[in-house]
Image (cartoon, rainbow, N blue to C red):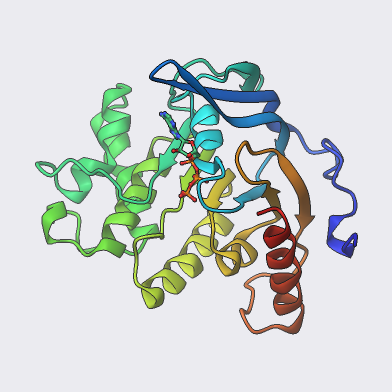
Length: 266
Ligand SMILES: Nc1ncnc2c1ncn2[C@@H]1O[C@H](COP(=O)(O)OP(=O)(O)OP(=O)(O)O)[C@@H](O)[C@H]1O
């Protein structure tokens, strides 16, 4: 059944906004001990400026691999990725990444971690400190600038990870289950915070999750992936007003419909 939200999903159809991420016929095979294992099969995906796209699909279907290909951490076996018109061949500062467990430098403070990227890029101290403080503030960590990571909770570490990625002024944010390790209450809070941050500091986002509530809370568009080797099963434009309510009847209806669609792809 075609949901109302699945209409208008041809690439480039999103109000004619500029395409920022273009994945063209991506396939990925891993070779382990002489055996090849296909994880991604012929994915075409376009993400337009400031769009929040969620990659949603069954466990181990290949979501992280696809994100890593966009990040330049994995090379596709066939196909190409472009970000802002530039071919992706390796990781780059134009792509900020946030992972499930954020690897912060333990010997640097919150401020040191957040301004690390701009300092490597040669941004002068005054400018990078101002930027770092702005983003530390934005993620709700004002007052923790001089704390070391070991003193921070899991949620606070993820906030630092988000501030660090933003501080490097990326064109796109790539987020791989950034709240997957948090307890349920903190996770809801962080989803809410991320939505607010994104409303203030718009970026093109690709966010990986296997949590349907999280996907519906955050996405402009949910890309539902098939089981491994993964391909795009279908897509849903999520037009619910923001901030969203987890108990809104339309939210619940979509939650059920998308969950059922995913179950069929298992
Ligand atoms: N470097 C690698 N070498 C070999 N196989 C790999 C490699 N990276 C991932 N895989 C395999 O590819 C498949 C997809 O993994 P991937 O982590 O991309 O899926 P996922 O959908 O993100 O999983 P999850 O929902 O558990 O986060 C898995 O079977 C995994 O074991």
